[in-house]
Image 1 (cartoon, rainbow, N blue to C red):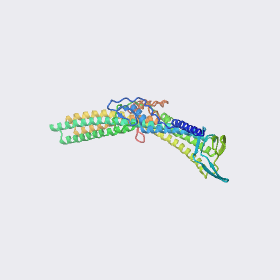
Image 2 (spheres, rainbow, N blue to C red; image 1 turned 30 degrees about the vertical axis):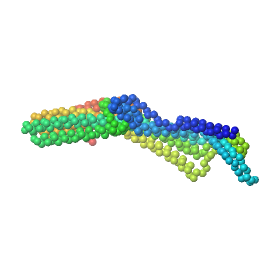
Image 3 (tube, rainbow, N blue to C red; image 1 turned 45 degrees about the vertical axis):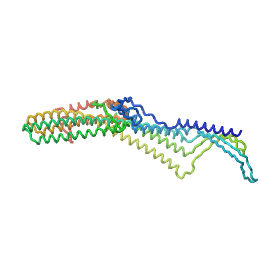
Image 4 (cartoon, rainbow, N blue to C red; image 1 turned 90 degrees about the vertical axis):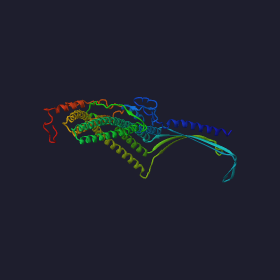
Length: 516
């Protein structure tokens, strides 16, 4: 009946392996499911779908800004990498937490001899018959007291996990800003093409008018040549812009996690709504909400826990153990015993390694604290710059629109004068060039303003899915006498600039030449 123990041992080992596989499957890192977009992606027209590199279904080719941001947050590679870092942080936390609980290990052995065997002893040789032996042991090892090392290590891992989550939100916010800028770059280029085409048509008409005047004898051939040169320049400018569109679409596709050469169209319009703004509340909001700052502060807390764990680890650890073993070795009496033990281990001499570990943990804590202070200073600067850019671009829109209206009227007047022989072709071409520049400035200011709004959302630390074109509401009321909106501020500036009012042109100027 000696065959039963090996079979029982094998069955126990197989069962342990099966259980171990289940445990490993439960603890194995799982691919984090990508967050669902805030809006479901619409199905593209059959036959015109583009397979997503991120494993998504059909991707629609025509996107609004919000849909593009949602798609990027689901499939952008940097965002996916950030999610994997969060998953790694969860795994590290679970591993550190496991040190607080008892650890169970199982040992088994089996030995079989199928031939007689001679064992030489001091009294002579002993011949043994064929035999087989087996042994089994179960060991439970558990911490008793470790001066807080395991607990602080677990808490440090938990804080590091939360830091990774904050960094993921920061990357999502950066991605949303980059997608918005890339999408508006595409729209800006397309609108700039329309402006260039309109300018090209105006110059083509000027070439015809100059040729007609030349035929009538009221213009010189130089006028025709000048108009032709300007027309060629405008045509070349349009061609350059048209070649830029696919490049900018590739950049947008890359941010969305799509094939770079896949077709894509952006269907959206820039906004001209003015936000309610005040700088100081925006700065305070950013210092409180920016995920980068939150991540850095969590890193400081994790470094503090790591320092405490390092100090605790140098003070030693008390561990308990429970061992049960059994065997049927024929050369000794069968054993079936339970052993209980308590051990205390403390490093006595480490050749300076102990003090080096503690110093390194302290230096890491000081380094992370410096990072927080540096980030806070950078955030203040970023918010102020994003705020200033949004304000200036909004003002530029009004200035550029007024310049376009004036130059359109100037072109009309100069063209009439040219047809009546009271203006030269050069004067008409100069007015057309000024109109072209004014139109490009209007396009640039409009899209730059919308990009600046998204950057302001990012700088404030708002959710990347938040509508960047909604009003930026602040809790603090405007200062006494200050306009509440950019529109009100512009109206106030125009009122002050009116003739006869304080601050109007010709009013008393300061030492720098700027009106007081």
